[in-house]
Length: 276
Image (cartoon, rainbow, N blue to C red):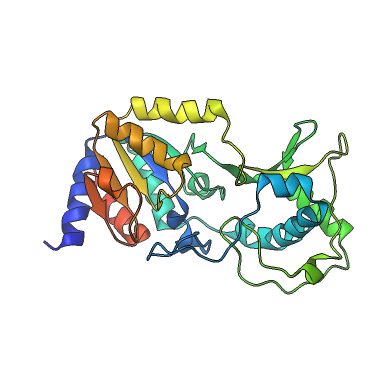
């Protein structure tokens, strides 16, 4: 067998034992039309993510973000789970997984049949008020923004990894931002922005899942940021097998016992539907 075939056979054997924890990143959603921050070469894409500090302190930047996010939400909302998401759902239904942790904010694991997914960085389909803490559906906010911006028109390019699009300052200048209906406070997608910390209880929940698992399988993550890589480090310290399925190198490769460089949809489908 060739390298990919051997890798898939090894992945199948590992998952078939049960007790595996999935840690997924943006690479599992690229086949659904949502780009990742790094291509297969590992090179950083040009997308400049919004930071929490800029969002909260700069009204002009916040307006620009919401204009970009308002247009980008169209792509995120209509995105459908791909073969990789469905494969993870099947593995869970087969009783082979202890859990699923995702760094993604697109909700596609749940749409693909996975249950109890830990959304490490939150989810774009929820909105939180930074003043009173109220949570509300993104669809509700989208309706309010559509009403407030009935005459707004801007040509947007492709969607960025965090669900917004590229707009010039001139294109965003006429956009109207709406505030919390309960208290008039600042609204923000219920996602962890750059410069913002993942809630400690959520991090502990993930570490607990690692402790209860027999293996860790990383799907489509370059493991560039410590937010996700820390769970790989913990798994390595516990001496458990670590499989990384990704197109291109990752910062966790040195800790992995199995590396598989292959398109995720096809590889995961082949493995998931061959088991049991």
